[in-house]
Amino acid sequence: MDANDGSDVDLAGRLARGDRTALGEAFDRHAAAVTRYAWAVAASPAAAAEAVQDTFVALWDRATALRLATDSLLPWLLVTCRDHARDASEPFAPARGAAEHLRWLRDDLTALSAADRGIVERCLVDGASYTEAADALDLTPVPVVPGSRAARRTGRTRTGTGGGAR
Image: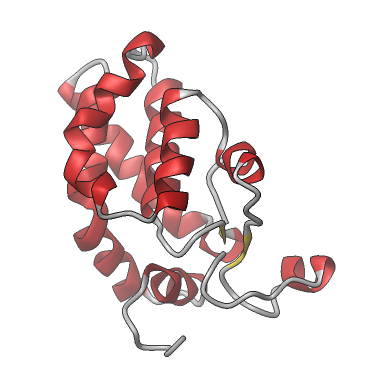
């Protein structure tokens, strides 16, 4: 994969190397979908805004340890947003409406690969973690930065895929 191809894997690698412009690009690319999801699940507009902010702060803070199971950051970001909305002090939206929450993301989800849609469904509808969803789909989350400590430990350095939310 070309280092400047503009993919989410490229963005994640740049984030892991401390490139602040990559965070802005990830935000520009995915903030609308993350915000729509936050509005669907958060207890209030303020909680939704906080969940979105915390999601992108988490992306920056966890970039060096990020492991993606597919080429898209969006499933990881949506799961992280769910976790932040759930952790908020205000009540979290009821789980029985989880599938309904995704209707706000219909166009975004249609653009994802089948594997990414599977991760989103297992995480946001069924309540699985990112890693559990990847395991259920027989996907292996790998570090976004080949040669990282985690990649050396597992022996996996696949380029083009890489880590996940909780």
